[in-house]
Image (tube, one colour):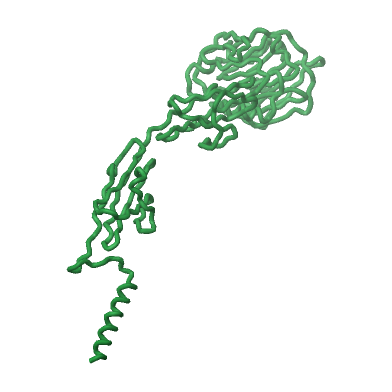
Length: 418
């Protein structure tokens, strides 16, 4: 009888030991039914919002612990514990909130899910002044933003601005070609679009003729041109009344204040388009259109486009008069085809360089000084009693500099104008 009682006691002890070691944390109430933690609620509910939301999670079951995720994964007791006293979860960007509640002695709740789409208003795009363009002197840059209280971050090294970039607080000066980028930030708003302006600083500008409705000098130096016969035309960007068309007969533009264009060294930039090729007068004689000329009988400088033989394109030609005759060079390294716009640049110091669309096309082997003639500059024809070589086609954006620009500056000029 004693052995039977010992056996029963041992069995009861083992049962208690196994129950204590079990990983089931629920405790069955009388009747054997385990209750489940109540379903969770979100306030505000999931949906589309135009502002940052503070989300609170509620659970009717007292003293239940709530765990949640924001990355779409299912929550577990290893997830972030929700603190009902923290003031809620801040949702500043589109997110999926998932939550699950646990309580000792009860089954965990079902997973509750709420999707929040946050579409915040954008901060206004900053405004950079001056606008991008080509300038002959240092520029004072100012940046503004129409969104009240926004802070502006900017860069000048080509990188995109972010919240770690320099904070704009006052105007600053750029003394060389610079790309200014700016972005504005404000609380509870999406960052602004990135504003960008490239300021090309090239010194030595004597005159600039954009031909925007007239032949006036846009450099600020007041060296306006006088048009004769030429018609306003559409430029290479498709903008009307922003270039001049020459008829190849008697059209030209005259630039007064001739002494300002007497250079010992220079750069001349001009955009040209030829639709009808020059007529070749005879064997070994090229047909020519003059684009820029100063001085009679070739004078100080003359820039032509020339057609040789049966070619279906033009080449570049330069000449000027010297004390002993004429000095000339031709450039056949780059072909100018009909109906296309080309930027043609010529520089002179100790040599002549031709650039086409920002790329060096040819270089002279020497330089003989011109005889300076006291005549105004002509655009579109040669000052000659026998052969004026009238230009037939389109001319735009003529620039004169009193120095030979570097290859890097010429590339910058092309990038800014093409």
